[in-house]
Amino acid sequence: MNLLIDAEKKQGDFLLRVNTGVSGERIGIFGQSGSGKSTLVHLISGLLQPDRGEIFLNDECLFSTTKGINLSPERRRIAIVFQQAMLFPHLSVKANLLYGYRRCRTENRHIKPETLIALLKLQPLMQRGVNNLSGGEKQRVALGRAVLANPRLLLMDEPLSALDDTLRFQIIPYLKSVSEEFAIPYLFISHSILEMQLMADRILVLKKGSIAETTTPDQLARNCMAHNPKGYLNLLHLADPVLHKGLYAYPWGHNTLLISDGEPSGTSLFELSSRDIILFKQHPEAISARNLLKCTVSELFRSDGRVGVVLLSNGEKFVAEIVRSAAEDLNITAGSTLFAAIKASSFRRLG
Image (cartoon, rainbow, N blue to C red):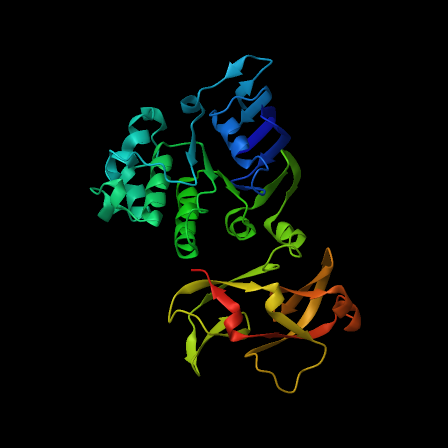
């Protein structure tokens, strides 16, 4: 997917002015509330008309003030999943799913409804009314309806923000799997750094109506570490633990991590805050933390008054966070040997 946009839109006292190009299959748009994320989505989809400018998708002009072009939303073949599911209340799940499919031109119907229904595990819901669905079920149906419109681009405008954490991490695998299974690129809009880390490969950062930078999820997490309540979030995919003295012992490369929360089998995703890692210059004689890893410092980076310490332990990489004075007192430099202590309760299982 190649998207080029050079456009302006003024709404009241707010001005969105964007001039950027981005390529890829998994693009994030990150910004705080009021930064212009939803306005940008509406301009791309055709729900809002720019005051001036041009928008191109895969070399096709969607909008141009100079050329007098403004393709209607249905001609753009761009589908949107909103924060709220916005299902048609008078239609069943099946009728909602097929709404866009039936309006899609025959030559553009590349996705079979039965294949998508199976992927999203919607078969038990097909005859239900949408008012009898949970929040997570509604978002799955909304996603299915958007995908069955056979779009060439999927816009996801904060689709997880109305869900609690349990439902959020149930929905994320579905969002990713439909894009991969049907080769549909997407723009994922959110103000959550964690969601950016999970959903995007490249990120456009919006601030006060303009693109402040184009970056990666890792660099965004580093830049925001000092101001994020959880610091830098290390994401660990762990599988097949064994019970050990009331804890779950997970293999992690050539290490073993002892974690208080886990699943007896299968793969789990865990979050570990950089602020929950204590660093020692020498091996401590006795500590209450159940995990003690010998590490080599790969690099250091700054985030305001904080220092991120990138650590390598038996080939596995993670980030710890300390204040600048601690880095100076410990004389930490690239190549230093440190010991990282982590409590078993510091790992948060996401799904």
